[in-house]
Amino acid sequence: MLTPLLLLWPLSLALTWFVAQGIASKPYDRALEFNLQALTQFIEVRDHLTQFNLTAQARDLLRADDTDLIFYQVRDQQGTLVSGDPDFPTPDPELRGMPGEVYLRDDVVREEDVRVAYTWVARGLNRDQLVLMQVAETRGKRSKLATEIIKGVMVPQFIILPLAVLLVWLALVRGIRPLNDLEQRIRARKPDDLSPIDNEHVPQEVAPLVSSINDLLERLKSSLNNQKRFLADAAHQLKTPLAGLRMQAEMAQQAAAAEDVHRSLQQIAKSSVRATHTVNQLLALARAESTGRALPAVPVDLAVLVREAVEDSVPRALDQRIDLGYEGPDEVPRSCLLPGNPTLLSELVRNLVDNAINYTPSGGVVTARVLVDPFSGVQVLQVEDNGPGVPDNERELVLEPFYRALGTNVDGSGLGLAIVQEIAQQHGATLELEDTHPGRAQQRGLRVSVRFGQRADQAGL
Image (cartoon, rainbow, N blue to C red):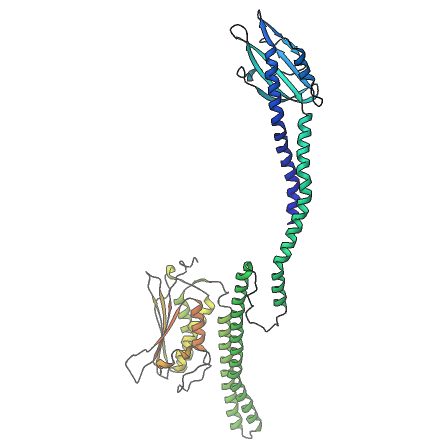
């Protein structure tokens, strides 16, 4: 704040100088006009001859000023000098004013800057002859008065400016002290301390900032808690297949018969597949939770993604004698493309198809379906099977990580639907679980519906 004050001070002095010049000129201009009006009384016209007869008192009036020099000049209507200083410049003839009106201008007489008052006086019998009368005064008194005004302004400023700087500094120190205290409190916090910052003694100006930081700490605390829970659950899920691998390897080392070794190797292969699947699911869930919102959204053709996922899953479905099919358009109309991340949406579709194949018994049917409303732009992805389904009281629980319905006897990590739920939320979609065959107690099945409500053109893509 000191720099602007120091820059404004010279500007203030310059403005004061111009104002002082105007203030100093006004009283002296009025005095000069008065002298001009007084001298016009001595102008006479006799027999068309202009005369200027000064009295002794009038001459003393012109010589009474000890500071400035007084010049005057009288010219008749033809411009002939009647009396006064011949070096006195005349005004522009084209700017001749009204008789009796007094005009002022700045000029130079004998290399002296002067202030000039002039007028045209009507004389003669019919007052038809105009006589130019001019009186000039040097600017000594005016400059002296302006200098006194400047001194009167500058001296207080020399006192006020340092005092203002001191007061501003004291006010800032006092105002910033709570901020310094807040800084010290934040610096003294431990790295694992995510508790909200006490905002009772925080300045009002930074209260919204502290509130935002507290909100950030709360979200960071929730994220870290989720991460800790995720790591604990992941460690628990990986412990079983890894323990099985170790046990089967030890059994293979101790087995004497080739048949026992072969059986142990088969169990090792199954455990490794289970562990690989669990790791892949964990990585997919971590990617969906942490990077989904940061990835850029592009127009995505949902029908193409579903057809590709179904085609890739056909060999697995044939191995399990499952009728896997797709219902829907080959391509979604360009006006109905979805705004989203193709990698995450592909992960969503593949998890639904894999989940349906896992829980569908041999000889069952799995259908992936894409429904498009060309008017509203709403698109619905459905993956249905004729497996055991999910009881109504467990449909919210199966969306949680690592939860698996009891009695299914199917290997899995319990992450498939949790991944689908996370990706659907990031794309503004809703997830719904319902029976494929409602009313049939023996063959219920499960239909998973993901409803997307926004088109790419509506999202500005």
